[in-house]
Length: 364
Image (cartoon, rainbow, N blue to C red):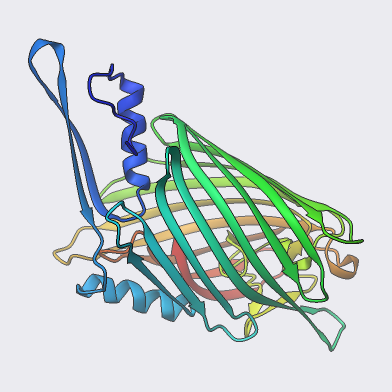
């Protein structure tokens, strides 16, 4: 039922492709395969093979994934399959990074009663700390959040996400939120365009606020060896009066996901808002990367990369002006078995101000 492949119904190419998308989204799967076998009288048999994830880590790859996340993100995440056998999982995470702790719990399930899609419920508490240039005091902002979301593929190439929630910040500020995301895939998944927007309605005298963004990305065909290329760019906007923790930025990929690798945002867990870092209510960014993957006998795959990052932010704290920053660099890539992300270690140089940085993180 979660794949919407009903016995005796017409199986179109789009329905089969959408079922494959939904199969890849199942929260409890470790690996999955969808195959089609012709049968007699114009019928076909769809074979669905799902390997569920283990309830506790057992393999070396599982422990490698946990260790890598703890070392790089300073966060431990645990996912446990549910007890009903319906493909649901329970999740919990703890980030022990100084000045930016976070704890979260969540539940994810395919379908909710007869409603399609992947449904999730989450609750979290986190802290972000900011340092502003020419100020000796730190701005500390905490947020408690609870929310529900649903995501599904409308077609084989169009996915939506709807979400709503309640938030409370330190100082007593409270707001209810509703938001959504649309993702369009093009050219056999080589191109993706993502539109995202969210609106908070304040409970009390504080003004309402919202966020919006667009991101486009291109990637070359995946290869086990040889060259691979990626490029991405986009815009983000946060309205006036919004909490600082929702503002956009670019750095080493930890405080905010966008990359500007010669200008990390974090210093001992504190987001530095200076004339050289890129952080504000409006963000423009672009990245390009070329990767050369090496063949070898080991299960892990190694590669090297060269890259360029561009970013600019405006409407920052205390009207700090941020020039357009252009960073270039090179790094190492490592694909660890059982980890669905690529580990990166990069050296980057800022062409405008001469800044240098070595950073570690993930390539998705």
